[in-house]
Length: 263
Image (cartoon, rainbow, N blue to C red):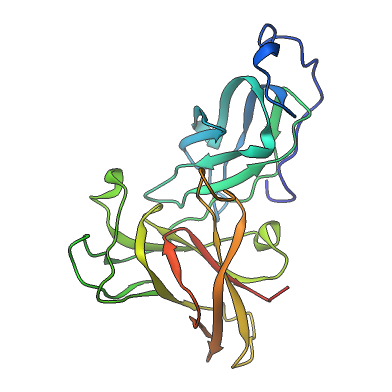
């Protein structure tokens, strides 16, 4: 299933069902989309069963990846897919995954070359509640340092699973050819009102000279004001003995965190 960006199936008549009769409310640059479907597998090539959504522009369409990770999300309306994302809600065993939907040429949107969903390989320290002080928190090779004034805001659905989680993100080239390493962190959506420092252990197979400065990037999960599903730069890191440590601004959320060679 790994490969290039999501691919859309054959072009359908935009005035045919299921969007017939809705032309008057058709957004600019939109296409009639009946269904978004495909298959989810994880970083160990096992099927992923989880809720999935297609969302954007104030619209939320809900589906589920069931047996063998097969999913089908009904949309049945005109949408501008350049503003939409496909969102995998796979916590607690897997990381959430957000993939932009940028091609709008069919009513049958087939995501047949999706990236693999990262599995949380490591469950570590319990993150502090909003009233606690900071500290150092680890999950596998990932270390997060929260300053004393930091608070951790966790989504209500994840309050009973506040352990820091980490998993290696596969298929790096599908996200950015310059990525050196990337880890998915959880619980997904947790926010830090005060930005934090992050230490990442680079894979042993990658040789980065000491003193090298790399970009620190995150996978944007901001549906309202960001670029969801895209990597955004949030600072820089310096490599020392195979560990990349933040030297600039930090992160403000638990999402995918990576380092890449500056472009």
